[in-house]
Amino acid sequence: MIDNFIRMVLIMKKILVLALTFLVCLAACGTQNNESKQNVSDKETMIYTDAKNDKVEIPKNPKRIAMLNFHYVGNFIKLDKKPILINEFAKESDVIKNATQGIETVGNDDVEKVASAKPDLIITYSSDPNFKKYTKIAPTLALDVGGDMDFKEALKIQAKMVGKEDKANHIIQEWDKQIAKDKADLGDKIKDKTATILEAQPKYNVISGRNMSRGSEVLYDEYGLTVPKKTQSIIDAQKENRQVRIGNERIPEIDADYLVLLPENAGRSVDDIFSQSVWRNLTAYQNGHVLEINDASFSDWLSIEAVRQQMKSQLMHMS
Image (cartoon, rainbow, N blue to C red):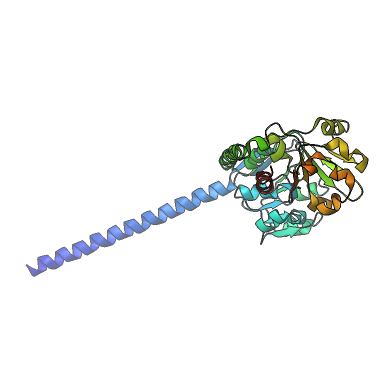
């Protein structure tokens, strides 16, 4: 009887050992499969046609992006693809500076530093004089700024570079909801109104039209304000140049319901600007419709969101 019991115990032990061995092997196989899938995913590539119309083979899921186009650093952060290296000029914006803490910066011609960062994707301007050198380090894409492409389309294009199309669509959907709320909140403050965006430099003034950052995306494209006819005629006279210099003698021509000043860009205080009578005679000034906007130089989504918040807050407090 005892012998039978001992025999049964031994059999059960063997079965248990075999079962445990099987489970360990199964888990190991699963881990290997997952690692194998991850390795395959990391090595997958795609062909992307960039701003130079070059077809470039790039990783589908880049992990080490060197973002040398400083205008759009914020877009890649917004897409959850934080670069490992960025152009030092990106941090001229406080918005981008705060969002890129801990990220290494590089100067325009420091090819060696770019190489030492071991990027798996480099993004720069098509006019970058070091473009060919970068192609020897990693797949390199040309990404330019401006033109007729709006900021939403730009985000979609950049999302495609890094496999984040769904993320971009979600960002745009949430943005559109916020803009709809803003327009409802602002109501008649912005309905059928005109606005001029201007940098009042010490020696000249710079007017910015549509698609030229400086808050134009929010003010014109989203809130629906328009450029005054006289201001637009000044811009149109410069043909392709959407930023136009004018002297103080032409300030009366750019009068509008709202005047958007960029004191940070101009390096000149608003008080100094309105110390001159030519500025104080503007309708926008007399009605208390002067907005002061900072961090408006770039066309990335972090900067545009910061501009939106400033514009809405100031407009809400105007009569």
